[in-house]
Each structure stands twice: as C-alpha cells, then as structure tokens.
Length: 464
Image 1 (spheres, rainbow, N blue to C red):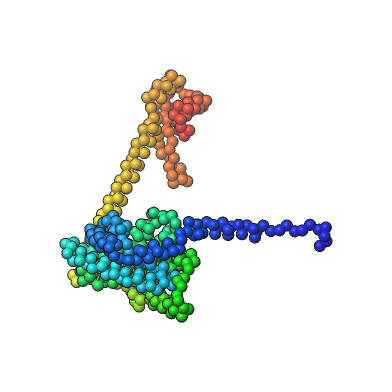
Image 2 (image 1 turned 60 degrees about the horizontal axis):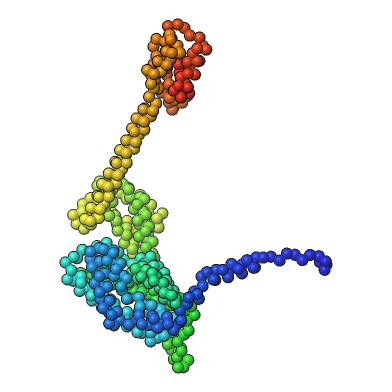
C-alpha cells in the first residue's frame, strides 16, 4: 500500500458497543439517589430491635393474621402483612454478613428468635381458645413450602434492600415486599399446628418461615456487597480474620442445608405439577370420576394416589395408566388407586362436594350452551325464512300486467341435489300457466324480470 492509497474505513462497531454498554450501565445503575452508607446501616440497625412499639405491633399483627387465617380472609391477612415488623432483624442479618459486623448479626439473630417465639406463643394461644378449628385454604397454603415461595422471598428481599438504600424512600416498595414475602402467616400456621397438636402443620409452616427469612437475608447480603459497602474495621487483623471466619462458617452451616432442602422443594414442586398434568390429561374416565388425588413426594419413592367413584377401573386400564406415567416425569412414582369400597378409607367430603358441584356446573353450562346454539340456529332459520319469503300474490299481480294471459302462478324456494354433489343448492322454482303458448324470447323476458324483482340469480321457470 502506497502513501497515496486511501485508508480503509474504520469500523463503527466498537463505538456502538461502547455506547450501548454505557447506556445499559446508566439505566441499571444503583448509584443514582444512593443514600449515605452510614445512614442505611443505622436505619436497618434500628429496625432490628424488638422492644416497646415494635414488640406490641408484632403481637397485634400476629393476632390479626391468626384471625385472618382462622376465618379464611385474604384481606385481613394482607392487613397483618402491612403492620408486621419482622423484616427488620432479617435484613439486619444480611447487612451484618455483608459488612462483616458480627455484633449486628448476633443482635439480629437474638431479636428474630425472640420475635419468632412471641409469634408462636401468641398464635398458639389464639388458636387454642378460638372456637374455629377447621383448617381453611389460606392456612393450608402455608403448610407446604414450594420453590415459588423461596423465589418470591429472594426477589422481595432484593427489592426491599434496594429501596431501603435510596435517599428518597419509595413508599410502595416496603409494603409490597411485606405482602409478597409472607413472613407472618407461616408463623401463625405453625402456632395453629402447636395448638391442635398437628406437628406436620407446625414443621411445614415453620420451615416456610425459615426459607423465606434465609432468602431475604441472602438477597440483602448480595445487594450490600454489590453496592460496595465498607467492611467493619477491627482493632487487629487477627480479630478481623477470626470474625470473618466465624461469619462465613455460620453462613456455610445455614446455606448448605438450606440449599439441599431447597433442591428437595424444587423436586417436590416439579413432581406435584407433573402429577396434576397427568391427572388432568389421562384420568378423564367415562363411567367413573376422580374425586381427589394426592401427590406424596418422597426422596426414595413418591406416590400418586387417586380416589375414584363409579364403576371400578379394570386392571388393564390401571396398567395402561402406569405405562403413561414416565411421559409426565413420573416414571419413579407409584400409582395407588382407591375405588369401590371406601368403608375403611378416609374420604375428603369437601373435595367430594367440590367435585360434584364442579360437575353439575360443568354439565349445566354445557347444556345451556347447547340450548343457546339451538335457539340461535332456529332464530337464524326464522330470519332467513322471513327475509327469503316470496310475495307470490304481488308477483302474480305484476306478472299479470306484463302478461295478461297468465292463469296460474306460484313460486317457492327449493333444495336441488346434483348427482355429483353432496351439498344441496337453493333454487327458486317458478311455475306459470298461460292461455297461449309463449315464445323463447318471452320466457327469457319473464326470467329476467323475476331475477330483477326477487334479487335472485338462481331461478328455474316452468311454463305451460
């Protein structure tokens, strides 16, 4: 290449990538409106303590949430969410881990333990004296944690700490996080389990509370580290190293079992959803009805249990159902079917009522829809009949003016079938008798008049 040769054009791709990455950084930056680090830490530290107004607010919120669960009222439960102060110490744990503040972690753990104890005591006392002991749907929903509960708690924790680190506090974020993360109803459900002696309810609900608390703490820790908060300074490097090792050992002890249990929750959720899809797709029988099904997840051997009413399901049909289970991810599960004699079987009466009610509603809706279709079809037929009604008398009088020798006249819509077609065609048949024989031209004139007068192109004229 000589000095006079033009230089090749420089590519604009690096500039475009630079501008795009800069735009992304500006849009997703958390530095804008960032509050002072010390103020954020102090605000979270103040929310850790449970004394005075915080303690009384917690007790009142527990009573409200317990009443809401007892009467199955989502609105009352939501009100308890909004006044619950449980988020403070949980975020304090995440903040303490993020800035290596062992004293904050210990204080937060002590206060959240106190809050959990008071919550369990209050809710147990309420359910012990409450005259309503039936477990409603809102209460049962808190006895079995799912992967979605953990995911919502984690995302809620992210939103909570991001909003809490802003100089201008976003007023609708913290209440929304309190509602979404659902810390209080699991504790109330655990109290219900203690009051009624149902350890399964207690264990499932308290485990849901722990999972939510851990996810919120992890989310707080991640955002604190992402924002680059300064680590707490200690007198000597040895003390700092000892504190850091203690914190991370505690994190390891909590996170490893939680990760394993979270993995089991994911497996349980997938198994339950697969079981629900299997029942919906493969268990629609003609002479029998599935009144209930239960998906019992177990690490070693899971079971799908169906309860049927109606004619007994033959063995070959049961074997066919088992062969279809692997396609739904249920290959390792056992299929158990209860049918026929329910004398020694506990029947869920509510589930049976709901199933029968659903079937009646479904049948009624189908019957109404079928009748509506028939009515619409008849209405359209009547409308077609009225619009296509031929005014024979008027046509006869008008034809009499054109052809005074007409003696007999009639017209009607008729269906005509061709030898090669399976669909009939609609043709207007017109019959006329005259006192004299008409020429072909006169017949064509009559046909053109009829087409113009009746707005019909398909006319068959019969003349005598």
